[in-house]
Length: 630
Image (tube, rainbow, N blue to C red; front, side, top):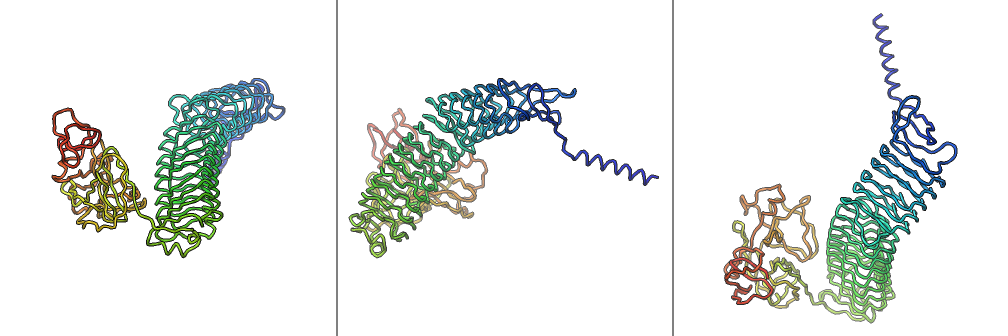
């Protein structure tokens, strides 16, 4: 009997478990002229089974069916799709999501009120609603789907709440009538000025296009594909230091854009990113960019100036093809490869400088450059390339400048051998010294130290002081130094004179931008100015590495020589305090390298040569044992 009862109970529980595991059945009903799907006390607005919605529709916060109340929480995919007779819609505060294609092609829709609980607007939600003139997106909304307001040609104003962090690609593209965008205070995504006629993007997808001037906020980390595609009214854009990538076709055919600066934070520029931006006259590519995508600046016919950052390692196929306004271009030492037809058809190009790290040049890279007169190639090993690299370019009348030791190699290798004249290069490097008066330098050739410049090696450390020794006359090749000079640009030219003999030196360097892998037995320091104190500060490692820029020096010290001074620290604040101040001995009278202002007190003032100054003009001086700037 007990066994039979046990089996019966077991069967009952199994039956209940099966019933509980089954999904609750949805019921579709029409209430007050609106169709709903009812599930678990919640109602979703759905498409009508017979006929289309028309006129003014007010969606209630809740509905009743068979004595039970249901909260209206969502509008389902395609609920009002192609309802051309729909004129206005009011969405209540109970609704949290608007699905995809909900109001797609509702050409008669002129007004929509979105409740303040909606968190998402789906893809294509208001696509081609060309009667819609204005829309206010409440603060509750965090994401606007791709194509959400695409082709809303009648839309003239948009207010975006401060909760929006994601706007999908093409969300407001082809909104040709859009003249006003108001972004609520605190919105992390976008700020715009000067009569925008379309919008911007988010942290992960694409921006929207059409503003005269666009300012992308510091929360944005990527500018997605097609971000400003075809925005011919766009004349200026400010890209903040938070942006790390610019997607393909991001500014495609923005022919009103005249200039752009790509910050150091950006690591990659996508394919066709600025393609056919014919109004673009100047481009500055930051030092963080590592790759320039295929046709990134192709057919930018008005481009006359381009500065390529010193972290770029590859220039993509056709990256600057048909930029007929370019007259000269300098490819930095960081670049190792130049793509196929990279500068094809640059008919205004007269001079090209190729850095010393280039190993390969693609087919027709400089083909059809009809005015090319000079090519400066600093690569000691002849870069590999096809014979058509300079096809239809008049190299027979042009001059190739190469390292003197490599002249014969270039003369015996096509297509380089086709140049009418091949000459040896004299090496030189231009060093910029900022207002703080200090810089590091590392050259791979013997160089004459310019007038009014002092160069020092770091001989040893004593406590937290770095003992410096002066290098006179000629700076030896492959020697890291600290340079002391007034603000300006100084040229270090190759010297045939015998350089001075250098003793111990803790400074090392690279002639190309390099990720230095830290040896755990050593500590690494880089030149920095922190709160007015110029010194060698502990380098911040990422995955055991730090970046050293081309022709810059860094300091490498055996941890065994540091004692307790080099104990491990986690705090970034403490890390900044880990420094070696410069000790120049009696030569300069500097006890501590602290950047400050000339004091009004009657303390003696000295120039960098140790001479007393009666009346200080602009420059760097020594006062009370410290470096001061006027």
